[in-house]
Length: 316
Image (cartoon, rainbow, N blue to C red; front, side, top):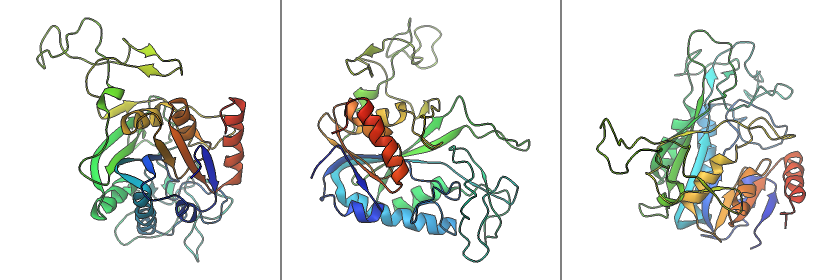
């Protein structure tokens, strides 16, 4: 199968075109539930209930598991939603319960009120808990839920709320097909701060193994950092949101898929993003000398991604 290519169309149908165990590492951020209408028939996120969204994600991930190698990993980024009926909420169709076109909301990765409607358990102003609902459903379906990683945003979107904290994080779940999988911890080690000693006792006054991201970063020819030594990467990743001109609000910052790809694959491996968007995952994968496959439903985002690669003379 050709790599370094974008498969256009419905993700369920296009995944069928990928051979069994062809992909080493999958990295993606699907449309979040009830946050934005991308004006694409069949898109994710317009399901009438949270349960419908979760069921659809489980079904998709079964097909993704087929194309993933036995020692492969799946890195899934998800944000949450609040249930409520405020003016900031997404309008729902009274008959279908789906998000109305023309009311896109703001898919910035931060929590937003869901529109009018009722639920048997979830109450008005409740956090829906979509990330963990999906994670536990995938675990129940046979995936190994290896870790929850916190994507901490130092520059989150502002929220006009006064009865809770401003949402400034999302989840990245590390999942695998089996208990033994490829994971290169050395590729994403955190460097020690200056004047610290690796291996010092935790809690010591001097020579403490305090970690930071300020020192001992060596640039590679591709412009990415390389770390020769350091400590195991912590599970809170502080990465600023960086919008990409012309793309939707939810563009991956390059640093996010970079860490996943470095840890989950080797040079020459195939990386898949089934919700390709503006192409950040493929862009980073190719810069890191990996092959990639993207699947995207929206033709506008495909044009953005293709233009992005063409401008850098990387599109094949």
